[in-house]
Length: 247
Image (tube, rainbow, N blue to C red; front, top):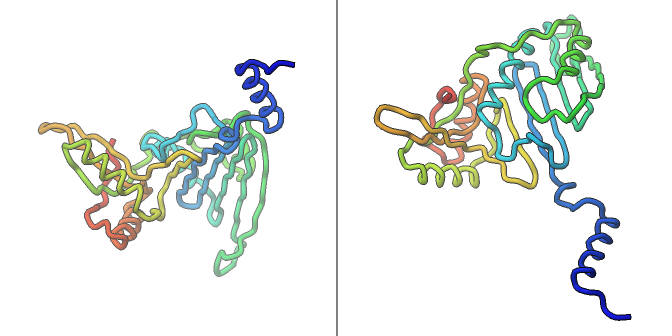
C-alpha cells in the first residue's frame, strides 16, 4: 500500500487527537473569575472555557461602578447581624446567609444557612441575574432594592500623571510586574491563562492637553484605599495618593 498524501495524514492525525483528547487543551484550561466585596456582602463568580463577554484584562472602572450600583443598596438592606456570600460557578448559584445569634457577645461562629439554585447562563458580568434577585429575596425575606443611580464615589490610588502615553504605559507595566497584591479592593477581575492588569491608564482631558494617569485598584471608601496605599509604600512605591476614581 502506498504512503498517503501529507494532507490526508495530517487530517487523520488531527481527527485521532480530537477523539482521544477532546477539545484543545487551551479551551479547557481557560477560566474567568470576578469578585466583589462591600460591607457584609461578598460575591464571587467563576466560569470555565471561552465565554462571550468575559473580561481578559483585569478590572474595569465601568464594571466596578456597575457592581457598586446594586451591591451598595443590597449591603445596606441586609438585616442587622446578617451577612451574605454569593458564589457562582457556571450555571449554579450558592447563597450562604450568616446570622449572629441574639445575645452573643461576638460573631465568631455565626449560624449558617446555605441555599443553591440554578441560573440560565454563566454569570460573567457584575449586574444581577434575574433568577438571583428572586433567590436573595426568598432567602432574606426582603425586597431587593433597586440599583442606585448615584451609588457614591469609588476611590483609587494614583501614582502618575503625564502627557507622555508611552511613559505611562511603561510605568503601568512595571507596576503590574512588581507590586504586591492590594488589600481591600472592592472589585476584582482575573482570567487564566491571560494576563490580568491591576495598574490602569486613564486619560484626562484638560485645557492644557491630555494627561495619562496610572491608577491602582478600586475601593469602596477612602479608608480602604489608604490601607492599600500603605502596603504600596512599604513595598517601595512612594509616589501614590488616594483620590476618587476618574470618570
